[in-house]
Image 1 (cartoon, rainbow, N blue to C red):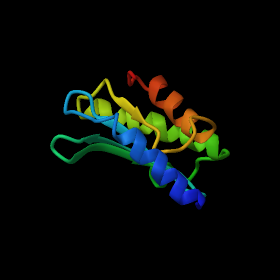
Image 2: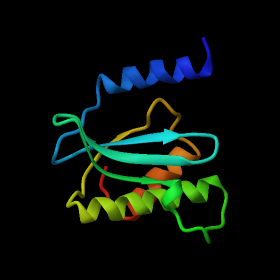
Image 3: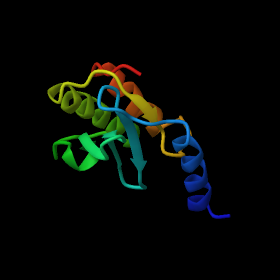
Image 4: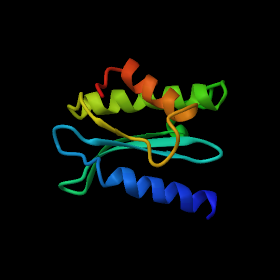
Length: 115
């Protein structure tokens, strides 16, 4: 089994247990080699309520990928606040809760999201 297949398998297993609602959307994380992105999803309606990506960071941003992930988490928290969301359920997307995924979660908590 390849690395991608293993991740997809873990993600399917997690998705069987985690679902987002309008009051408490799912914070879904996607990690690539170059960056990280996250979005808040209402699974009942099938809508994305807020999102943030490393592409949305200012061009003047300097730092490693973990610092980049923390900034994306803060940006997502700010976008969530403007959409009226303060509590979420975390979906790590089959990735280990370590490194960049943990940094994004900590940045979102620092920005004011509760999970």
